[in-house]
Length: 304
Image 1 (cartoon, helix red, strand yellow):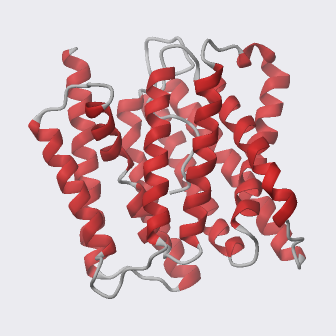
Image 2 (cartoon, helix red, strand yellow; image 1 turned 120 degrees about the vertical axis):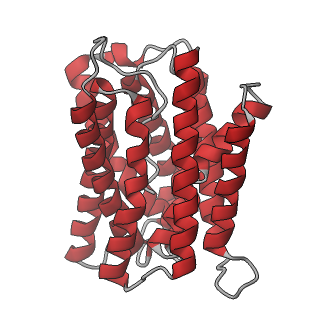
Image 3 (tube, helix red, strand yellow; image 1 turned 180 degrees about the vertical axis):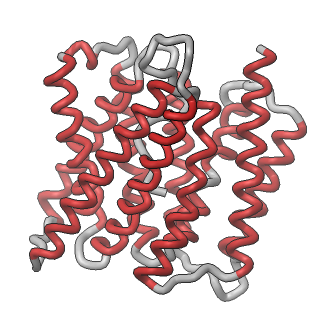
């Protein structure tokens, strides 16, 4: 997926005790629709421009939006008791985005997206081993099923494996680390603060190597594609923020799996990449396991 910087596990901005989940679901669905277009445009641009430049162009739209947010709400958004963790999260976000773009250069959209959905399972493993979070046998079974689904998608040793899929796996690992940091920060900072730090940190870090690899787009079409990608990425992030502002994260999180639908449709329409039966089976296993993991997390939160 487009690996949004908005943490799905963070607490909402709104202080209301009456969440509006239907509207939240709508905003989330529109947000991931925008991310699907972002991925499509990123894959197109990655064929002509360096991956670092594509990532920078993607982040620039959100960066402009964050600057507008700072102008409207004031610099108090930057106040945080954990600035180092916030900047670390931004650096990890940059790494995950770069790895995902590298995967998109060689791997079909649907395959790369499916592999990145391993992130929730990796978060569960890290949470259990590092944060000592309780994980029952049912969730461990879901994690095992999710990894099996990934193996069905990539099928190493069966002639369909592309080495670049490793970048998608690395993107999922980094994305998982980012989500763990989001959990650590969610009790202290708002989503606006986390997104602001992530955007500023990742954009500034990405600007350093950009000086050495910049390639001027050879046509007006590439410029328009880059602008459209930046706008869609920023729009997707702010739709997610709005959705989490008015809805419950545990209710809205399953909407992220709609990305596989958009990736499959866009990949077929633009690149004629239609996943085979085994890819669909693997995606189904991953989605089912992920939904069950989210369900168990929601049950555990209700109990606690």
